[in-house]
Length: 256
Image 1 (cartoon, rainbow, N blue to C red):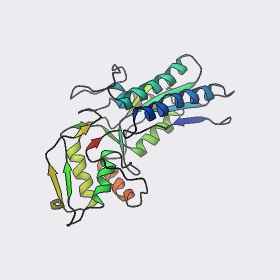
Image 2 (cartoon, rainbow, N blue to C red):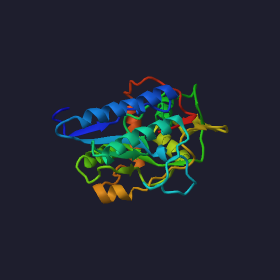
Image 3 (spheres, rainbow, N blue to C red):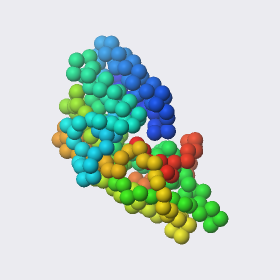
Image 4 (cartoon, helix red, strand yellow):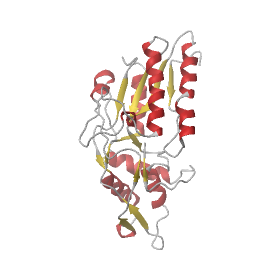
């Protein structure tokens, strides 16, 4: 790392972890990384991937800008916020050249099965006439962004005027979870009559609405999302054919 120009912290625990594991991944790990970067004679740019959930739940219709108060309600969001504050505090103190990208829900190739869409793809691959899919959907709306757009944002943050900033990275729109689910079902070519929507309670950890205001990312980095969600879900489905990630039952859980 002595000759690095860029250090990206994308490490972290998922919604599936307990509070102890989330705390370990999101706080002391970031502390140690900041201390290590601060000691380098030629400081690299440190880009830390935070989460839109650090803001906490917001009223429906809210486009969350970077100056929105942070009031997270879940262990995941609370510990992610502490990690982001460590990076931003070190940048303000002049210890590191760092920034935070607060990313919305991510989809596309490699989406883990612990997420709603990754779990749905996993279940669709096992759906047959003898084993139809029962699915509980909600009317929540969430901001989803393709993983490749996130990677492009990281690349632009490497040299942009973003030191000490928290910057939202998302689609900038709140998409219907029901519509996203059926886009993925369509991509899978599983016959619609093998998918049965059921009534029930869905355990949601992300709030009923997320929509990021992404104007700052456009202004400071020239970044904007390029991958349409339909394409992202098509590529998620294609990539899930060869995925070897551990299975996780996640159809009733929605998270980042």
